[in-house]
Length: 441
Image 1 (spheres, rainbow, N blue to C red):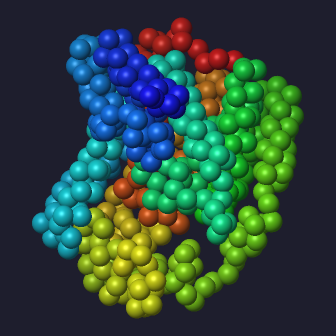
Image 2 (cartoon, rainbow, N blue to C red; image 1 turned 45 degrees about the horizontal axis):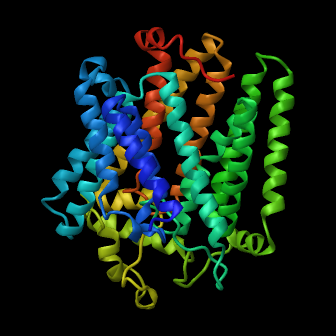
């Protein structure tokens, strides 16, 4: 006997891969994102469904759907995106580090995971090639964020005042979940600002669930990311609205007030007490404490291993560079760096950090280029969409500064989204072929 949750998952998943094979491979991308957020392996209803590798099945459906219709797509499309070369250079570097990795088995696992991300990156840019498909992609991403937010609301905090792991698939912990969810907030605000009535209503409900789960997790990094991305989004939207109707500025202020009021209403004393520790420097190895010492240890590791340690190197060496009592308190017998940038520096060396920074800066350069294009053509709604996408990436990077997410998928999904958006709007051939596919307004 199947539960409703199990039946819905099976129905949606297999409908998605069938649509990818028989209609369009972009449905496989939607199914992949769906599985990423639902992450059935941790749900109570998972024993009721077949134990399959759902993410790989979804990826294969994209590849098969593309192979059947390869003549409709331009294989070199992904190379028109500036950050692609840095993504590939990181892949080459990781393969070369296999020769010197201090933990060869752990490094091999992470390299294979990264290669999966590279393939998905290429497939997204390849098959999401018009505005309608892109709108569906972002819609699925936001529905996924909402599902995780809903799961957090159902489960609630435990007796220790924390919220355990609720997904997505590669979030390292609750803070990782908050980092992924906070990246969806700017896009929800965009739809509340410029969506249709039904989009505004659904986005507001989704916003409440997403803000609520960030509060339940008590993630300081996600809170900082939310503030920074929120301010960036508001400032950029105000700059854009000077060239359009003045009532848009009124709408923006209204949306901002709604978001702030919603957050203030949902936040409890436990959350604010946690945020009050942002300025505190701890001298112990408790959860989330003493991160300055974690970072200093990472710098020492990089000086001893300038070429990189290979994947998982920080955790492998942590016992040699951190106080003994920190390690004994840790259940795993090791400590993570709690920073994307330190992870890149230690695992992939100084060259790897340079490649990662170039990857990030190239993504922002690409976004600036498409924003200039849309501003020139006075497509202000798409320009607002581009700003929201950029703010999402900023939010995730801010949160990732305090998270070990070098091998987490959203770091590569968001630039793929931005790359697809850029090609749809900036390439004359693509713009012409998709001219009849307008965003909902």
